[in-house]
Amino acid sequence: MASYRQRGKSKLWDYRIFDKKGKVIATNSGFKTKREAMNEAQEKERKLFQSNYTARFDSKVTLFDLWKDWYDLMILPSEKAESTKEGYRFRGKMIEKLFSDIPAVQITHKEYQIRLNEYGEKVTKEYVGRLNADIRTVVKFSKRSGIVMNDFTDGVKIFGLAGRDIEDKYIHSISNYKDLLSHLRSKFNYRESVMPYLLYFLFKTGFRVGEGMAVCWSDIDFENRTIKTYRRFSGDKQVFTLPKTKTSIREIPVDDKLLQVLKDLKEEQSMVLYDRKDLNKEDLVFYDRRYRIPTNAGLNKYLRVCLSELGIGSQEMSATSGRHTYGSYLLSQGVDIWVVAKLMGHKDIQQLIRTYGHVLQEVIDKEYDTIRDLMVE
Picture (cartoon, rainbow, N blue to C red):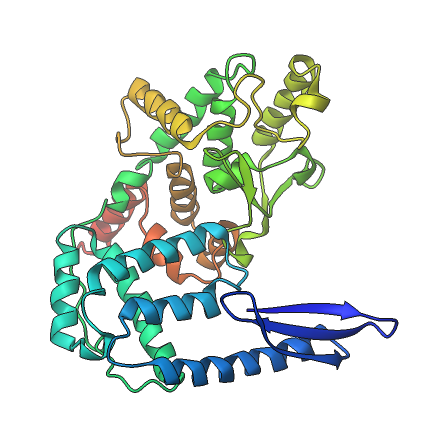
């Protein structure tokens, strides 16, 4: 791993490269910009890694060993969110569990397929696919580093248990969607709970749950009717985290009714949080005097109670269904798919098509009637 410093009166940059034990193994200085120092350091790291890697690579090195080198060099120093890195580490542990008994050079395509199939008997196809994607990247990385080995991932087939259907993750009809919003408004009482306010906000903005929790009053532009998001909040851990991706940093338009709800909430907070300076230093919008920011589990439980009271939805739904419903609703109303992708924080429309490409029930019925009319002779 490399570190960079700007030193001296001339403000020139230098770099130092450390091994896994923290010992400096390479250094240089005199660079005018940090980018110049980084370019040389990264090339030096690559050469050092390749020489050391090739020298120690033998018949005993496991796939997990290769994964660990790839993770330490390519993922750990990256700007990926900690939650994303945690996902990589989880899959790394699974690689260690599944392949620790066999050297990487002895893994054949058949053996790899057998082990993936066995893993797929316990988890969903989506999890198997993610694991295979990481392993495929590790194999390619190792081969680029000079390791002679077969790509046993080539042509592999992904099998696994069926995951939860997207149909269980959103409000299916526009009327039910509006009924839920009305029901949440009827529960507005800041002195009792901030949860209905937060859920209403999520269903009206498409924000991820953590994004909604992290909204501050300064993020709301009441004059221009927009709200921005640039970070997340973990309700369970009560800490701020980085945005999921760079495209997650965005500003979305909101309607007057939501803005009025927020204005009323702010006024109510000013009366209840009389010691606001100590209680709410972050100026958070969805802050509860007794419980601070809601937990994900608490928010999910509250939503399911509301759905049960209305007799709609599925007990599988979570607060994230607000995001799914928002995306579905915009698409159903004819909002351009690229605009929806931007509002949802996606870099392109592919994720949108895979996840939110369905439409709501009223729209399906309407289109069916249109088709019937078109086919009349």
